Length: 227
Image 1 (cartoon, rainbow, N blue to C red):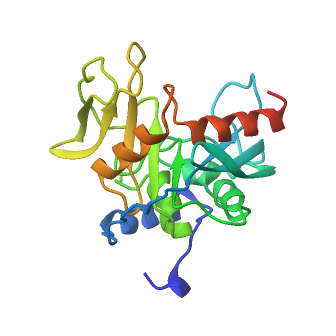
Image 2 (cartoon, rainbow, N blue to C red):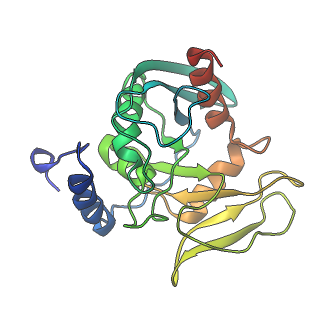
């Protein structure tokens, strides 16, 4: 859709749902990873110890990192406020603008961005990993502890083993074993990424269970919060 017609981060649930339906219909050109690959990640956290869904105005700490050849080469931090409570399928209301702003603070954006968010595994097939990539014009990959609406059996207990995650008959992601003896991660191809590419990128930066860029962004955000 033309930039002048884009409402990137709607402020109401109804308008966000409308945008999600439009995003779900988009089929952008597939991204081809460059060599070498600079992989980034962004993370947002909220106050510790609070129960319930939270609310608009909750303090928030967002962080972004970029890694190249196994080293963090750039970092960005942002303190802000949540745009709304947590509602499954509407995470963009709560955290989308914060994540977008912290990534935009990076002097040199990454080639691909990892997020703790889903993409096609979503009630309207347009989760935050897809939405943020579209908003920023960056290829994205979601990496989560569990699927949102998709389902599938776990893979074998071997590094690199994978098994499909489906919504109905559609494969929208996969379980991926990044470390034997630990729970697999759900991998979600987001904006301009396909599933094989998403798996390759995640395995390339997952030396432990969690991909290193996500680990770094999470730790940076939590330190800013005060752990």
